[in-house]
Length: 278
Ligand code: AMP
Ligand code: FE
Ligand code: FE
Ligand code: ZN
Picture 1 (tube, rainbow, N blue to C red):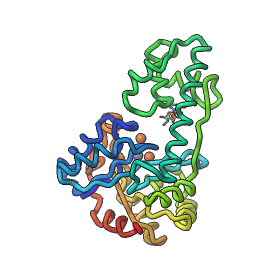
Picture 2: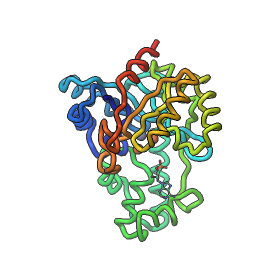
Picture 3: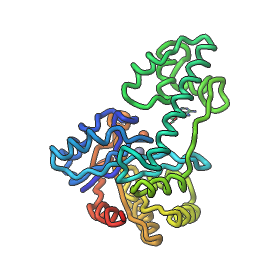
Picture 4: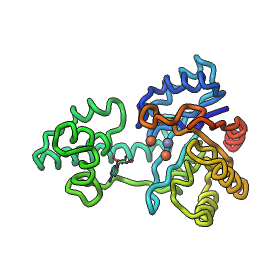
């Protein structure tokens, strides 16, 4: 068994990168990928621990791509910290987020709310600051009635403290990943909310753009849904991959390796993925 989709404290998970490696080994995984959102900062620590523990390790990240309606998540495997087009895109998204967070703090201060970078940092730890941290701190300060109220009255699109963030689309992510020697895989394809025929059309287009695989064995999908995705992968010569989307205590129903309990991603997924690297 393997797990090609996990999140650590480097994005929005509750466990450190090293802990995720330990959990994967304890679950009986022969390999695990760390796929934090929009960043590669956990890769070094995770790899070092994987070598100590004697488990296979795949460096990666998960990029939120603009897609209407909603977002489309693209997993990038064999992505290393350092130089390259994918890394440049991640840096662009990160620095835009910093600017956006500064603006958001300034706007909230203008509205008389004493929120600060320090308070947000206390809440977020090492993680990338985002609106959920703002909402939590706003609720704690008593500036809003609840976490959800923070979105409803201030942070949501159209609200007085809404700032859009920089975006990237899936084709650009796929191309950047390839330029960096990485492989792009469509994460949890059913989250796109597309009807089966339209999903398949989109997948075919992304395959033409260089997509390497789609995530079929996903913890929260039924056996039928997983098989349907495996069939789509086969029709478009894509690798069928899978993972738990582990987030620690933030998604307490998911475990590394076994997902909601019955997940068992075959090692062949990683063998096939590895074979696609040039
Ligand atoms: P950000 O990446 O900083 O724009 O934050 C996006 C996250 O904010 C989403 O993943 C949700 O967790 C949360 N979020 C966005 N819009 C809302 C909303 N209207 N109500 C509650 N949570 C929201
Ligand atoms: Fe996440
Ligand atoms: Fe995702
Ligand atoms: Zn994820």
